[in-house]
Image 1 (cartoon, rainbow, N blue to C red):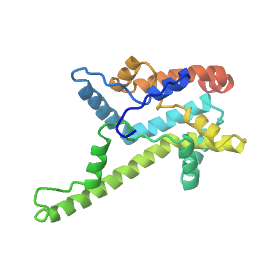
Image 2 (cartoon, rainbow, N blue to C red; image 1 turned 30 degrees about the vertical axis):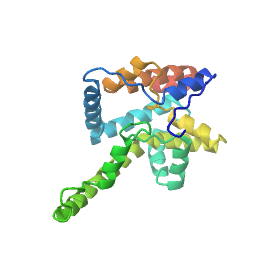
Image 3 (cartoon, one colour; image 1 turned 30 degrees about the horizontal axis):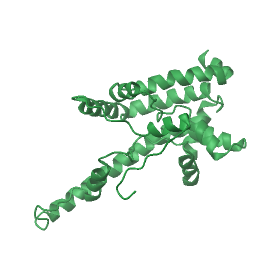
Image 4 (spheres, one colour; image 1 turned 90 degrees about the horizontal axis):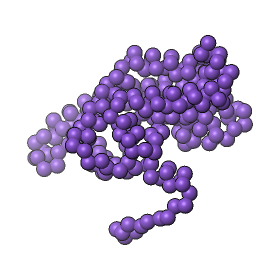
Length: 239
């Protein structure tokens, strides 16, 4: 408020943990930021390949059948869900309810958010270095850059649809059964919720440094809950 910090006293422990978990406190360890960037680069390189996306889609489809109530028709679950996501209105419902996972994001609490937005808006332009003389080069680079970004964006969207195909089928099934959009969104997201990072700082650091550590932890966590919540489906798929 007017440049001054405002503090609130939160009595609800769960609410407090949820709010404080939205921002990770800085850890001043030499080389940590570079290590995190290296891990992100490696993860991006691995998960961006077509063979990984295809294998991951098969694995997710089988897993969803054994850990949710989506059903055992794996072809309908995947291809039906993938087709359903072509409906912009349906996809919007999933997004607004939290059921659609997007795997590229910018955190609102990122201190460099303004810098990132500024660079994206400039698109490789010049401010001080004689813009008139370099206008043709800038325009050419901008066109090629925009074309490359468009191709990459569409490829990533295709990958996101594959990742969310089973979520779409479960979301649609839950809505048909009379559940609210919020409940359906939770069930769809809970197939494997990568946004969960844990409350302990050391767990967050491990997730930030070790490739696929978060996915490994949550797959075990989800399997354990599925044995309790969906024993029939879990046993059928596991056997």
